[in-house]
Figure 1 (tube, rainbow, N blue to C red):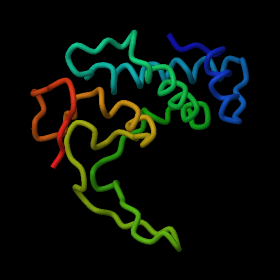
Figure 2 (cartoon, helix red, strand yellow):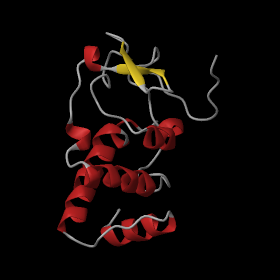
Figure 3 (cartoon, rainbow, N blue to C red):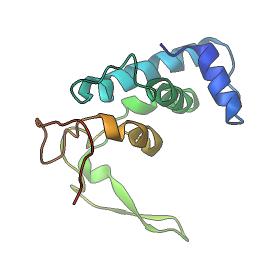
Length: 140
C-alpha cells in the first residue's frame, strides 16, 4: 500500500520534494482512490493489484498531480470541452467536439499513469470491451 514515506523516497529519486504533512497525506488518499477506481477495477483477469509493480509508482504520480491541484482527477469535462494540440509554436488548441466518447471521455488523464497501466487493463472504450486476454497483444 502506498504511503507518504514511500512517496517521499520515490519523489526524491526523481529530484522532487514531498513534505510529510497533512496536505501530502490527503493528496495521497485521493490518488489511491483514483488508481483504485480508474485502473485497478479493470485489471485483466488473473492479475492481482497487490503484486502489480506499477501500482505504487502510479499512485505517487497521481498524488503529485493531486498535491499540486487538489481534486485534479475529480474534474469533469464534456466531450465538447476536449481539445487537441494544433500548433506547438504558439500553443494553440482546437476544440474537436465528440473527439472521444465513452467511459473515460470526461476524466482527466495522466499519460504517464495510463502508460504504466496500459499492458494490464481492459480498455472500456475499445471495440472489444468485455473480452480480455493475457499475454502479448497484437495491435493492427
